[in-house]
Length: 318
Image (cartoon, rainbow, N blue to C red; front, side, top):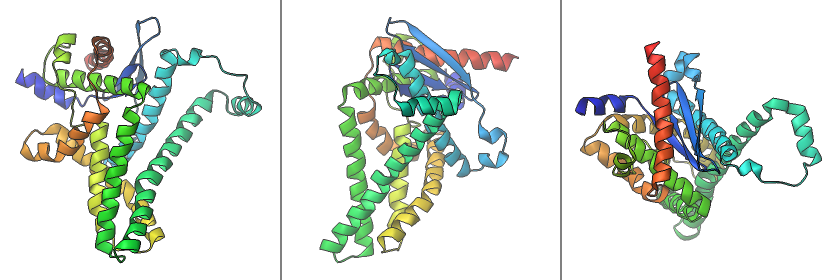
């Protein structure tokens, strides 16, 4: 059991909850399983070819974290759109296409979907930067200058508190949406299934149901680590000018995301007091972003993980 547990953790299985389904990702491919409108489970697979295989420097510490972050955003958007299609959301009838939509299809053809994914990722990044970097910097500067005399140290502390409030408030707010609640239940199914696998137990609905829904390598934990490291780093940025502070934060963001990746990677491979202490804030936040799934959701997650394990097992035997 202990040997299987060790080996299974080394497999580095990750995942993502999507619309009515779960995506599980291995080293060489991912599998997406979705509960279709007729209540069956549809699974699609796709091979992964990381950019680091072509450019070895992309495997360097810190840099690999930035690459992994961008790759996860692109892949996440791609599987989310695919899950919507498999879940039957594309069957909803819409009004007649506009001239602009027809022009886009004519201009870009089969590449339109890829361009839309990249565009959506860019919009997501801009939104996050505006919400979690620009807004706290502006509000922190305003409050500090208006009430606390413009002290640099207090400005950093105020910005940190504002970031935490915005982050937790945003998570709690979206968790109240009906569709997001179901995604968070699938998120719980994803974690439970991976935890069951990494513990060396057989992938059955009962074993998965009895596993914890919290995991140290979760995307939520990554975001929390990014938040914590950014608070520590930005606290010591000495600039008082608002625009200079924003620019400095943007320039440091890739470094922070890279460092956060290394922390998550380290935490996923170890289990001791220090690791648990570092992982605690991210795991605690998963109380919001994961919910207890039903057995049908667990079945979908198991199907997705088994598809990855079967495919990679076949590749290893070739």
